[in-house]
Every structure is written in structure tokens, then in C-alpha cells.
Amino acid sequence: MRELLQCSAKILFMQNGIHFISGLPRSGSTLLGALLKQNPKIHGGMSSPVGALIGRVQGAMGPRSEFSTLVTETQRRNILHSVFEGYYKDLHGEKTIIDTNRVWCSKLPLVAALYPDAKVIVCVRDLVWIMDSFERVLRKNALGQSKMFQAKDAITAHTRVSSLASPGGTVGFAWNATQEAFYGEFSDKLIVVDYEALTREPKRAMDAIYEKTGLPAFEHDFENVVYGEGEEFDANLGVPGLHAVARQVKFSERPTILPPELYERFSGRNFWRRPGANPRGVDVVLPTQAKDGQRRMPNPNPGMNQGMRMGAGRMRPPAGA
Image 1: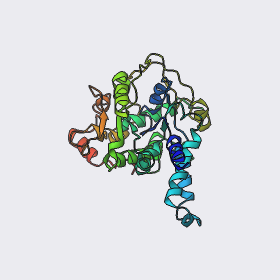
Image 2 (image 1 turned 90 degrees about the horizontal axis):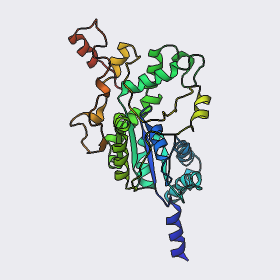
Image 3 (image 1 turned 135 degrees about the vertical axis):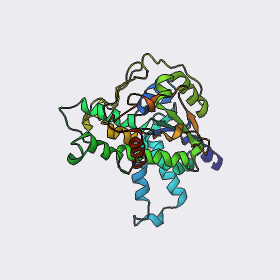
Image 4 (image 1 turned 90 degrees about the vertical axis):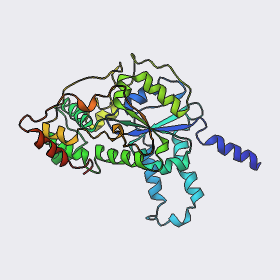
């Protein structure tokens, strides 16, 4: 009987496996989820509430709770497992689960403790183009108001971008968490996927993801991506189209709409591309010819000479500050 129960417990815990998508916003995570949904053996999509649920449950079992001393480590592990098992109960018996949330990069020790075989696919993009993308989608909804910002932060591009880049902001938190994961002791769990690699060379990027996760290869249709799950979420947030995915996977060249000062502040921050900046040998899927960080504003402020621009670059505040 004991052996039967042990066997049942092993089967219960995500019997077809689980992996995660995390990383930076506006960097292809929704597109990646939409592509993975084409595979009938995988469940993927936009951000799920599991990360937030895990945080609440951890808090309820933490030292601030009067009952924390009554919860053993084994019970703590079982309870956290049950959050995943319960949320995906109707799916994990048939499909491999790919759960998406920005928080996973900041919780790699937890991921490693609960699911040692899981990988975290980290979507990244040049920081300046993340800010540009947010500003672009916000301007498309000029008649509405977004819940993303407090009134004082929604006034100009500068205040909006500064709010996004703050330590607790949508971009600042994800940026700091991604660096923590990239340079931390659990970095062997990461598969970093550059936005340009995913959009310029989607087949090569997807093949690399399947290979590094150990999942069976699948032929995706990059000309006919169908995804509409985020419409209600985006409308409620006041940013329609935030999670929209184009039918065809392709990289779009465009000039930035950010003022030169903001472009200077955030350009060239792609640490995962820098030679010698990957001391732990993280798996990184880069484009064959990277162009994202160099295009469309070679001289962002014609009134500044080269020395002045170099000085401005040295004075850039760190992201998340």
C-alpha cells in the first residue's frame, strides 16, 4: 500500500512536466505562448495567476503568520505543489504545462526546489525598444485611460517611462529579476530567447527551445498565428491591444517615438549580448545578425557632440532606479 501511495504521488506532480516563461515585458512572451498553443501536447498562453497565488500562499505560511510554526517544511512543499496541481488539474494529465509570469525569474530557488527538471524560458529585448513598445501601444488608445499608471505618472512620456522603470514598475521589476536570474546560481535552468531571434528566425528559435527543454520537436505555422486570449484582460487594464499577436511572425523595422533623452537613457542595455558578460554560460538564443540596439537613432541629439553624448551615456541611471 505504501509503494502504491508513493507511486501515486509521483504521478500527481505535473505528470507530463512543467516549464516556465518569464523575463521582460514586450519581449515576445505572448507570441511564444501563442506559438506553443499550436502544439496539441503543450498548454501555453499569456501570464497566469499562479505566480501571484504562490506569493500569497508563501506569505500565509511565513513568519508574519501566527500559524507559521505549525507548518513543517514537508507541508510547505506539499501546499505549494498543490497550487500548481489544483490550477492545472484538468490539463497536466494530458499536456506539458508552460506557465508564464514575470515573477519566475525572481523565484528560481523555488522553481528548482519544486520542479528540479523545469526550465525557465526568459524572453528579452533591448530595453529602449521595450519602452518604445509600451509608449506606442498606450498612444494608440488616446481616448482612454490606463490602470497601469497613477494619474501623476501618466502625464508625459518621461513620467510614464520613469514609472515603468522604477524598482516596482512593470519593466524595472522584470529587468532586475532577469539579471538576478541570469547571474545567479540557478542560471543553468534558463533558456534566454532574444526578441529578434524569435521574430526574425522563429523556426531556429523554436527548435532551440524544444531541444533545450527536451520536448519533442513540433512544426509550427509562423504564417498563421491565432491568439485572442488577452482581449478581456487588456480591456480591463485600459490598454486594448497590449497582448495582441500578429498573424504572421516577423520583425518590424521602425523609428523610435521616444524623445532623444529617453532613447539615450535606455539604449544599449542588452547585457545578454555583451561579449564576456555571460560568466555562467547561460543558454542564449541570439539572432544571427543582431540589429535591435543599433537602429533608427544613430545620433539621437544632433545638438550634442560625441564627447557630450559619451558623457550622457556614463550618467545613465541603472534600470530599476
